Length: 339
Figure 1 (cartoon, rainbow, N blue to C red):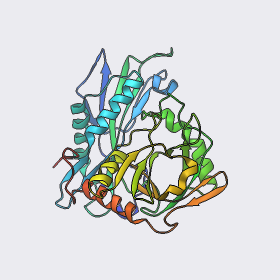
Figure 2: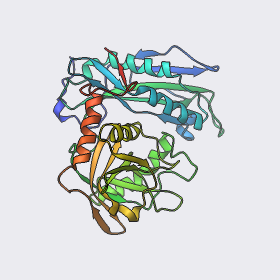
Figure 3: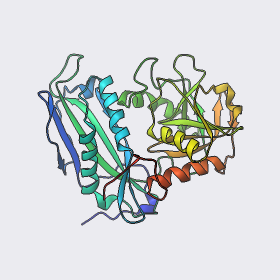
């Protein structure tokens, strides 16, 4: 009997779907890969992914259009970023065509889990690579698995498009000159404890400052930061420790070309929050999350509203989601139609 999903009540949680893709790297090459039904992996107990964190992952979504078709949003950029992450951890790179073809296979095989147009839910894809095989020394593995699974999701932060508050943490998510710019598991493991501290104090998540000076905003939980200044400039932080968010770079383009704002990647100093009238978090999972307030050293700094979304944030969200769902014409190369 097929599982019945309540599209309106989906959060951001795991759901077992019908098929996932698995490909193995061995003897210096990738096999052809295949779709399988088993959602469990059998790996050696000495695999490098278990002991030394040799793993990387991605996140992207498939969207249902009004005409019933399906499309991916900028999967080539996910493929590029994953190659960079793999390069950083000395893992074999996934060719772009293999990456996108695997995504397409997974979406097609699990189409029944993609909500109808207009419901507000999407199909989230999680590609990942792990070092496997018999290993014990601290060195790169000789074997790897590249896998993609998917699940139907709604918003990452509960409540959808409404302002939430964040706490600035003293902890770092990545070291200077470390792996902050790569999408690897260690960065997220480091964030679990400070995230829990923020949650226990009633905040949505925490804001990380630069690991060298602790004076500049870097990331907002597992998302990127952006702000709209009082003179209508769109600013997002720049740092080698920040994950290069595909959503962030899409918003930079939308802010400039669609909203005709001046845009800039620049240092965002935590003691200069007064320059912003609207701020938010952005990412594949978060989409756009308005930030109503940020607490720093015991003082809460508020922005546009604690209860309402600012006008520029609304427009950024409207254009981004409209492009993703096929309602607004996308810049060339942003959309990969599946059917």
